[in-house]
Image (cartoon, rainbow, N blue to C red; front, side, top):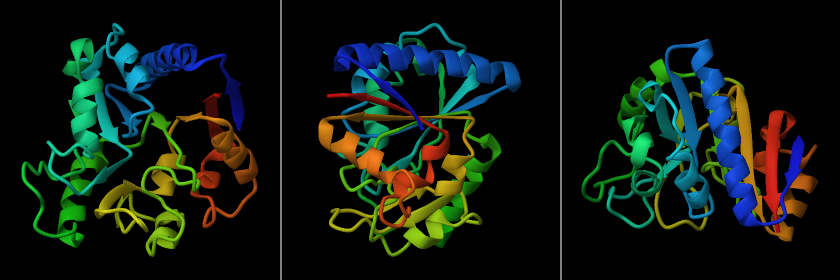
Length: 229
């Protein structure tokens, strides 16, 4: 783990956006299209605001959420909706977007089944591997929708896990779809964005911990962690 500490959130957001821009530029020297994995939630919003205005070859970049709540696109908890509002703006509007919600405009009738996961995976697979991953972390050590206690967690952490799985997140109000640990771990660059003393302690304690207890531990060996109080 490489740990970066910042004086305040504004400084962190600017620095992380600049790092992501540089990583994406390097990725585009390796191959024709780059895959950029990003989180939902409100914390990365200022990073997205800055990043979206950078002059990159956005038309050669595909963006995929690290996970998705199984809700309509217009729902306040939709990661796709947030990314369209905060990241796919300005120059970044030219980027491709790989939705993990099946393009649902209305509330899905049922949780994602095997056919839905297969269809979403077929859409994602040609863009893999991930070139640049930006992730958040919850106070239980979860990343993407890899939650401690999820019945699917063992399978999602396995080396032979498929790229995408349906996840039942304990205590959460809706089903989810998530990228799995191996596809996240295979990213060329991994950045994890956290704030607050509690999350700093969690991520420091997670080094060497069983990923079943703190799923973020599965990614820390190669991760750059960005933190501010």
